[in-house]
Picture 1 (cartoon, rainbow, N blue to C red):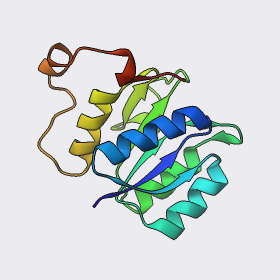
Picture 2: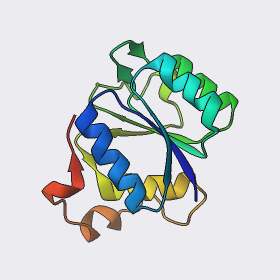
Picture 3: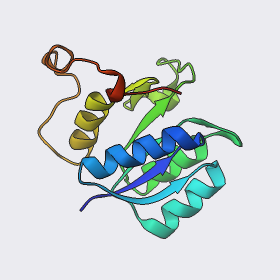
Picture 4: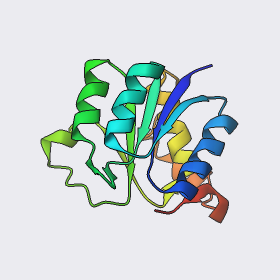
Length: 138
């Protein structure tokens, strides 16, 4: 079972994301609410994939993203913060803005694990209606 590191500082969102990870058959290896906690947990849990809120109470996750890249752990950024896609820090990174479409997150997680789904599939939005329970706000 693939292991996920979940980095989110809002408790309710973290709980909803945890539930979704389990529904997808993923093991939540750890949940961190701070950059320092996430880096420590990354070292302790050796996850297969990570879901990261970029702006946490103790700062932005630049150091965490660098550590994830160094360890070759694929990740997706899920954030309510405005992200400048021209910023080199976000080159070749999947970034989902909150409220998160959980079906889209599921596709990206599958893709990051080497699955066959494609996040850019134009049929994705049309095939999955956006119900309130499929969105996570931030």
